[in-house]
Image 1 (cartoon, one colour):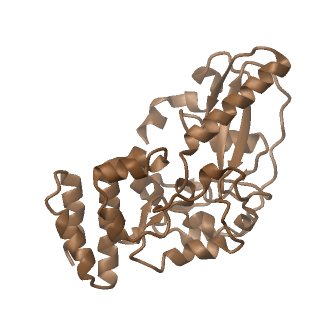
Image 2: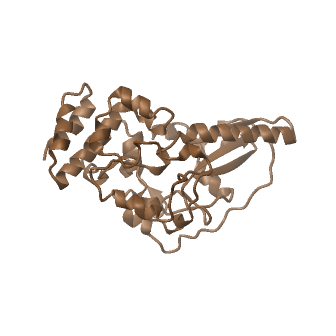
Image 3: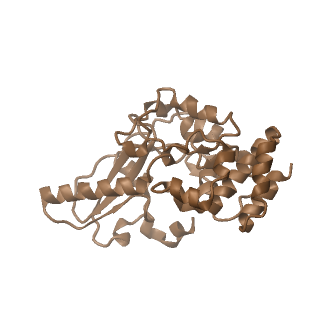
Length: 306
C-alpha cells in the first residue's frame, strides 16, 4: 500500500499530519448485523463449505462505514465544542495515513492481536476504529495488557499464511488486500487459496476465541443488504456495471469497481469448478470471455482452464 509509505513519519507523528495536534481521541464502533446469532462464527465458517456461494466480508454487507463513523465523529466533535468551547480538530476513519490500531492500543481500546488487529476482552475485534485529532492537552489513558497467550488460531487458519509471525502480517499475501486494495492481476499462487471469498476475508477473526464477545451494532446501517450475503456466484457474476453501481450504492464495495468485482468472482468460480464441474458456471464464464477488460479476460481464462 504505497500511499502509507509515501507519507513517511506522518503516520506515526500526528502533529506532522495535522499541525497543532496535541492529543488523539480514539473510538470504536461495533459492526455485527443486528440479526447475528451467538453461533455467528460457525455460520460464517460454514459459508466456506458452499463453493458456489460468494463470500463478502461481514463488515462490508451494510452501509459504508467511512460515511457512518465519520458523521458520528463530527457530531461528537460538535458536542465537545459545546461543552469546552471551540477547538481545532480533524476526524479520521481509515481515511488518511493514520496508524489506527496502534493509536487505539496505546489509548487502552484493546491490544494488538497476533493477526495485528485490535482485540478487546469485551468486544472481540468486530468493530471499526476512528480518531479525532485535537489541539487540546487531554489526560492520557493507559494501554491494556495482552490476552492472546499461547493461542495461534488466527495464524493457523489463514488460507494464504499471510500472518508470517505473531504480530506480523504480509499484506501482499492477505486475501483482504488482494480482493480490495490490489489493483492488478491476482498472483497465480494465491488464486486457489481464495476459495469463494470475493471481497475481503474474515478467517482470522472467525477463529479468534475473543470474538465470542463481539457485539451487535446498535445501528441499522450495518444490517446485511439483500444480495451481499448468501448469493450465488453465478448471480453476482451476472451483474452488469449498472447493476453493480446500483446494488453497491452507499456500500464500501463500490470503491473496488465493477472490473475488480468480476476479477474476484472469476477466481471464485474457477475454484468452484475445480471442486465440481458445473455447466452453469462454465456458461457464466464463457459469457464474460470477451469482456473489454484485459484483467477480467485473464481471470476468466484462468477459471476456464480446468
